[in-house]
Image 1 (tube, rainbow, N blue to C red):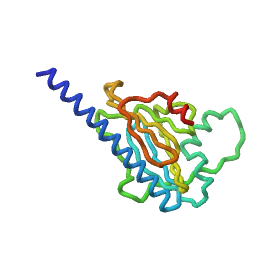
Image 2 (cartoon, rainbow, N blue to C red):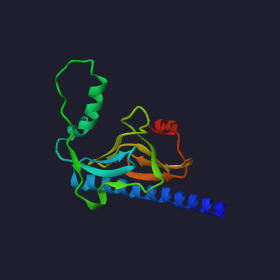
Image 3 (cartoon, rainbow, N blue to C red):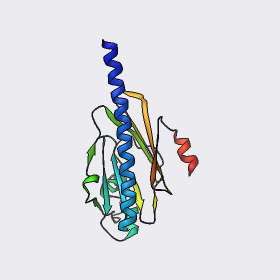
Image 4 (cartoon, one colour):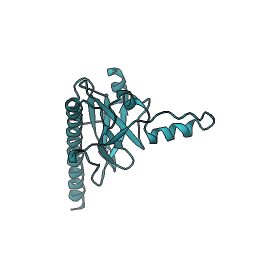
Length: 185
């Protein structure tokens, strides 16, 4: 009986990983569509450590501001460069929560976690903190790979790949290597 229960729980979590991957693909496609229709930059924010995600819209019409550091990212950079005494402050990106119920903050179900996020503007996999996937009004998106996994089983992982020129996403039943991500670029 114990073995049957353990197998049943494993199957339920596997189905949850697959379900959450599908929801992530829907959010990606929705953000892409909103960006094109509204002519604004959007981004998918993923809090890897907290296991949550939501959509944000750029508040400013200035497209250059989307590439500036957010307040949180700016604080991290300032900590890295605390030895410097330059008091000039760079402008910060101006993003706010998207005004859609479909893009409100969502938390992954218990037992499901983000295994990491890799985007084209990063040099290494984000396994903690926040990561951002950007969507642009010209019909492109930032290339990215998101790992969604069973929190207790590192082998039960699905990869959601954001396709940059299509603004869509593809789900893989395993963990794609980062070499595959960099080979595409």
